Length: 317
Image 1 (cartoon, rainbow, N blue to C red):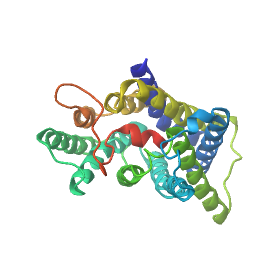
Image 2 (image 1 turned 60 degrees about the vertical axis):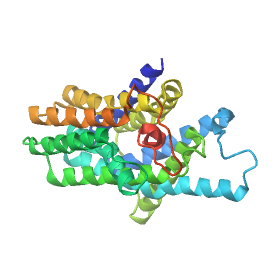
Image 3 (image 1 turned 45 degrees about the horizontal axis):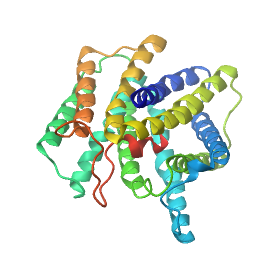
């Protein structure tokens, strides 16, 4: 059941880019998509926390000072208002310019970037296994880009996609300071609220958001908020509880595979053989980074060491 829940989560996240493309075709702008997605997800998660108080439990309670709790809440809101709002804006801007399947492959370089950053910051060691994974991921990324000869490739879109992956890497490293002090669903609700606040403020400054699109646009926005945000997160947390973080992270590499398959079926996109080979190398490197000698198990976490799997990342996709 745990593995099935993790795969369900990956499938829901993997469908987001395709839902976004279909929303664009229905007349939805990226600004409207982001505002409705985060606003609706924040409301749904808030209602869930109200009806299920147990989901608010976290290691932060139990006599911790109110100022400490307030600081953690402020950091979580800031992660959404600054980090995640920026990452999502870059992601959906790139989605306007390039194929969903290629975007998914480029974005999924972020686990490798997190590992590189952890080594450079002195929070982790570069073992031979990790070194081989990084070489494979770098070669795979080059194949993805060099093999992009179709009309779906756009240099600016690729740049925005890499910027989204870099921003997501920073987001993960920073969010490691609160992910173990706030309950996962509560953290997700706060991040969504922070992101919605930033996007709402930007809409007010720039003259508002056009929400006059038809029911098809609202349908795909609801799919993004409900299926690819709320359901995806809850399924991941439920699966994580049963499988452990390393197994959950490896199963999450199913996400870009789902994106590519759905983009082929629904949008008529196609990856070149070189891109497919490059994507396979990137995904394999992500899986290798989560494996330990003697099998897969939950990673031992030293003080100050960032989470390199999707436990932190999925706190707010």
